[in-house]
Image (tube, rainbow, N blue to C red; front, side, top):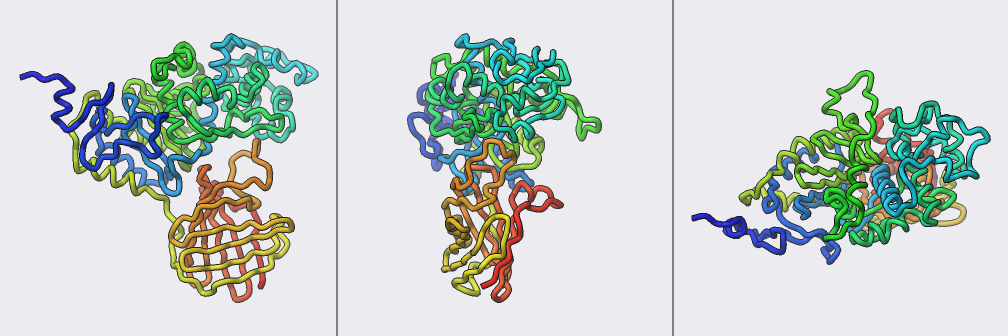
Length: 528
């Protein structure tokens, strides 16, 4: 007897709802965290042709590697089939995107092109007549919007760190030497992406985050994104976007669906095609560590998207902020985290996730599925290890003069927590730390949070969300970690007590990736 696919799936233990498949396997989570009307639909891996064992193998490989993930979400056939957040990160929190922001800036340009506000062949100089250098070189005069989008502006060197030192970033960028004919040589250039943001704002009178809100964020149900700005109030473009994990997944799904969302063409399919196809080849390293065909940074650059191996494309940001679109698999994978080897992360995706995605529904491997659910529900980042017992309950130390301007620090310990309070001449900076647990709070402690690029940084005194945990690593040393859980980064603070003296050292996680580097903040010395 022949049975249709829907009947077959029901006999395997699946229920069919609408156009997708929802697992009825006992113990299966069919709704994601904070599921609401704007959420992507949920399913189980096997119902969408994905192996639970394959996803589990990926998570096991991550756990045994040096990569630190904060979240991941796998979407197949438009349904979330696996998702997880490593505590203290979580689904309702934004996460700094670094250069993953660029793909959203490209999308803003795409909307502006669709609305007839500009073309990618427009010359950049025409948008900023009042910010041009006294002498406009031939190469600057020839610079087009498409050259900004494809990282082929022709700058003599990457200009971003120099540009953000200026009060007027547009003028500073246009004053840079343009040594090469635009469109001929690839060079990664975050300031070029900023210029795309500036162009859209010049044409629309809106920051790109506001311009994208009714066109992208609201139709996709993406709530609460934020974006840093330059001194002139222009979104930084090449970095600075913060968004939730599911927002990334929706963004990737929109591109996978050629710009369509819930039956409506949100973004023209022609722009999706143009923005995600090969535009320019990146130069190969003189001493490649692997064959070029296996290097995900040598598959060609598009309009603020990268081509990837396995005929995929992606947006990505420093330390492993990924939106990976796999058209041949009808799948999207997003990840956030802090890794010093983004290629290493992609290698694990291609090794485990890619082969786990099949072209047909799968029988449920109940043991693997149960183990996957257990693993996903127990993801957590490590805390400082040691004892929670304390040799004293409270002490206050007067600090020697230091570049952070901190004058005193006090410690108060209880059974399940610690209160550390730094004081400067104007204010207190209290930090509540859990002992063998995370304690959420916020801080504006000088020198925090760790940051890769200065441009667009919030004003001093801005408070950042933290989750803090501490432990006594020996009888005289208390160490606490502050995870800035809306960024990829954390701080480790080591407090060594010697009678009536204390010595406090800082190590941020960016510096910690280089074993020979030292944190720029001073060592604090204090006495009771």
